[in-house]
Image 1: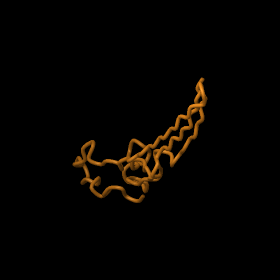
Image 2 (image 1 turned 30 degrees about the vertical axis):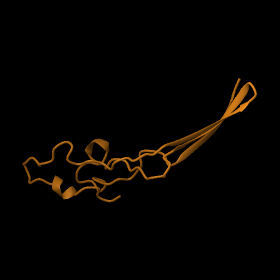
Image 3 (image 1 turned 45 degrees about the horizontal axis):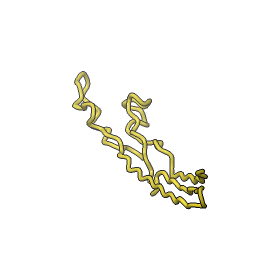
Image 4 (image 1 turned 120 degrees about the vertical axis):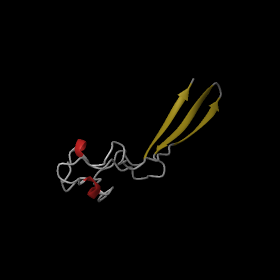
Length: 101
């Protein structure tokens, strides 16, 4: 993503402090939905359980924070204020089968 925030506000006049305060620029939020379902079936004195777990069910893109001085791109660099990666993996699922005795 190009220019997550207005980078021109970080250009103070020479020999002056800017008006930026920590927390003024925030990264994108994360909305993560997980889903789990299980079914237990009895077979006499034993039983088995089938289970499925899905992580990031809706497969949303979770963008990382924008590049600022502490993460590599300093003020004035071409990458300052851009987002070039994601912070979480995409949708994953796991299936399990368990025998209880």
